[in-house]
Each structure stands twice: as structure tokens, then as C-alpha cells.
Image (cartoon, rainbow over all chains, first blue to last red; front, side):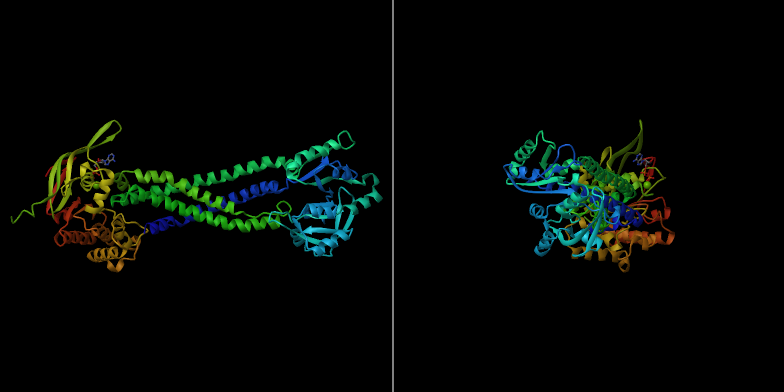
Length: 384
Length: 230
Ligand SMILES: Nc1ncnc2c1ncn2[C@@H]1O[C@H](COP(=O)(O)OP(=O)(O)O)[C@@H](O)[C@H]1O
Ligand SMILES: [Mg+2]
């Protein structure tokens, strides 16, 4: 019966309740999306392998390394596998269709990156076709490609029209694996460069190295860089994680800012909800006084007010959570060049619920204190 | 022996005083009130606005605290009880009737009457029996699913009376119960209160400044500026 009272009270002022619910829902939606963004970013950094090293030119990513380094790197103790590649930066149709594309050594690359899962026949077909390419499932779906299609990229770093045959479609081993990448044979790139711009041939953007034991990563890195000390192109070797972190060190500041904003959103809605609850409770002072007159204690009044506030906030929270999924899906499809994976984690849902509950709880504190402590005689007096 | 039960005092008030502080000023509201109320009596408390009637009623009903003096109700000295003890005591011993009915707008007539029973250990079925009985007494059994907003003022006050008697308290306190009603409805409410005294043996203490309402009472007490004048 108190439950009935709570629920009916919650929707007594329909417009006010609905507006509060919408406010909380939007706040929770924003909170959920921002948290998802931040979570995915950290997940990406975390999931980048600690057993893989990336060797690049010590000066900057823009400068390359000779292909001849591969044999010397392979000889460094602790190195198990090596692959290499170039950031190709080709454009498909126009800039709006952006996706990451690389020239890589196919066999070793696929070995080193088991998270890109290819059917064996497609893998074979890719490895044996010099003009073959492989693309992630999402990228393929977005562009409506199918295996066997001819795909033309306009080179930016490497000028010209480049034609590839799609030989395989990979899927990610994990949900968070990027399924929007495109890669093709480094040999195809290199041979073309030999013919057109020979001085740019036999150059590698980065080496990717698998180590025998992750604990050796630091030593192997140092050993590799020492090997090329005082040579024409000195190297910088770091774990893939560190490489990515460095790549996005700017982004980390932004991520922290986004995290702060996500909490600010909750605090704002908390203040708004608290104001609404205070207004509501003020109107009900005579009712609370009547309940106390009948013998109900401060505890009952508290349950009534907290209940009402939490009911509204949690309904708003649930609506917000339900909106989060279509919103995340929309981001994933419409903004896939920025967010190849945008999946809402269960932790985010729990955080959403916790945030909504907290909003309802905090909003009820002051009104409850008022309702519970007001003298009955004063409360009843309010009615006339 | 013949008259002793008639003469039992259910309320005994002695040297009761109360004042309010307004800034540095102390405003005496009740001064040295002493009187008794006999069990089964219908008492009207009259006096001009601001004379302290509501304050006195609140003190007797245990929803306000006196500065000095004692109140004994049914042998219990309520002036010495704590807040929590008073709450329990009120729930068991006093029924309240207000000028503006004070029903919960979101609860039906039935639920409003059931409300005080939630503090008892009665089962759902027993509560239903009590509520139906009380609604029958006020002749509103057919309206029990109506919300207060769907009832007239007189009907709402009858629901409030049902709520006041559902726990079967010995005392009913009513603060201007007809103050917001038209003459016909007011007359109905007064007749109902009369029945509660005569048929159910309740003691009623009613604040009013309506002479017609006071006419139903057995005893009329007058307050003037916080002093009992007769
Ligand atoms: N909480 C309060 N604070 C200050 N003064 C009060 C308070 N409650 C009542 N009073 C004063 O006490 C006096 C008596 O009030 P009340 O008992 O309501 O009178 P009545 O019911 O006879 O009209 C009035 O002057 C009123 O202003
Ligand atoms: Mg009054």
C-alpha cells in the first residue's frame, strides 16, 4: 500500500514527472555514451598486445626504415616473428569513405595478428594474389563489397590509382577488434615504387615484431635500437601498447576531460532533480504531517519520499539505458570511421543504473529531512 | 454505584500553558488551562480566531508539546511521552478529523481508510473487514473505489471520519470539521458525530466557531486569548 502511494505520488504531476524522467533519461544516455567512449579507448590501449613490438624510425613516424633491417632484427635474441608494413593512406571514392589501409607482408602479418580471423581458403587466395587485399567485415558491409570485387584506391602518400582484388573478409576474434581495416601486399606497393619512384622503394614504415616471451619486451626493444645506433636510420622500438599510447597521448587528455564531463552531467541532473523533489515535497508537507498525525514515523515519511524520487530517477535511468543501445548502434554505423566498434558494456549499464539511483537518492535527502523533521502542528497549518 | 462509569474522566488537564516565540517576543497562546472531559462526552471548544483552540486540541491529541502543565488521557500522562511513544499512542487512541479532510489525494476512499491500519498487526483480510465496517458507518461503502477528487466535500469528510474511527479509538478530535462545508453537508457530519457518541460511545472534542455545530455538543468550553472563560 505504501508502494501504491509511492508510485501514484510519482506520477501525480504528469508533466513534471515526465519532464524529470526525460531529463534523467537524457543525462543517463549522455553519461552512458561518454563512458562507453572512454571505456573503449582504454580497452583499445589495453588490448593492444604487450608481446608485440613496433619498430619505427627514431626521428618520426613520417620517416621510413630500409627493408634490409628485417634480417638484422630477426637475429636479435628474443625475436620470434617479424612482419612489416607501410601506412598507405589511400582514399576510396572520397575522404568521407575513410578507412585505415596498410601495405603489409601478408603471411607474417596474419601470423602476428591472430585476432584477424580469415577462412582458410580466403587466406590462401589472399596470400597467392599479389594484387589481393583483405578487409574487415564491417568495412565490407558498409561499402557493399564482396569477395572478388575490384577496389580502387587513390594514393596520397604513394601517388596513382591502385587496384586491388578483394580476396578475403576478416572478422575480429573479439568484439573490440577493429573490423574496418584494409590491407594488401607490401610487395605490390614496393614493386610499383621500384618502377615509378625507385628512391622510395625498399622502404618500410614500421616493423612489427613478436617476442618469444612478453617479459623480454623491454630488453628486446633496447637490443634492436642498439643494433641500429649510429646508422643512417636509427630506430625506436616500443611495445604496441606504448606505440598506441604515444599515438594517442593527446587523446588521453581529451578522454580525461570526457570522463569529467560525464560526471558533471550527472551532477547537473542531480541538482535539477533535487530541486523538483524539494518543490514536490513542499507541496506535500500537509500530507506528510497528516501521515505523522496518524502515527506514521519519520521512517515511513522517508520511505515515501525516497521511494518517489528513486522511482522517477530509475525510470528515467532505464529509459536512458534503453536509448543507449540504438544510439550506440547509430554511432557504430554512421560514424564508423571514428568509432569502428561502439558497444555498450555491461559495466556501463550498471554504472548507468547506479548513477540514476544516486540521482534519485541524493535528490530526496533534503526533502526527506524537511518532511521528517517538521512539527506536525506546523505541517497541518500549511493546508488552509 | 449507579453513576460512576458516567463520571469517569477520560481527559484530565491541569495548569496547561504554551507560548510561541516570535523573534525576541514571547506570545502566550494558552495560559493555565485546567479542565476535565468525561468519557462519552461531546465537547465543543469555541472562541474567536487565534484564541488558541487548535493549539489546545493539538495538545490533547498529542501532536504538540506543552510548555508546562499535565495532560492525562485514559490514565496515561501524555505530557511525559517521547515523540515516538506519542506516535504509537495516537495511532491507538485518537481519531483525527480536520477542517480540510486531509485525505491522501492519490489513494481511494478505501485506501485512505485503510491507511492507519497499516500500523497495526491486522491481516489484509481483517483490515478489509474493518475498512468496510467503517465505510458502512459513514454510509459510503458504495464509493470506496473513488478518489477524494471524485467526492463532494461532505463525502470526503465522511471518508475522513471513517479513517478516524477505523482503529476504534476512544477519543475523536475534530478541528472545525464543518468549517469548509455547506449547511446540508455540515448537518450530516454533525449527525454522524452525534451517532458516534451515542451509538459507539466515543468521546469527541470538537473545535468550532459555528453555533449550530456547538449546539450538538453536551458541553461547550470557551477560550478567549488563551484563557478558559467558561
Ligand atoms: N507555529 C507557530 N508559531 C508562532 N505562532 C503560532 C504558531 N502556531 C500558532 N501560533 C499562534 O498561536 C495563536 C493561537 O493559534 P490557534 O491555536 O491556531 O488559534 P485558533 O485555532 O483558535 O484560531 C495564534 O495567535 C497563532 O498565530
Ligand atoms: Mg484553529
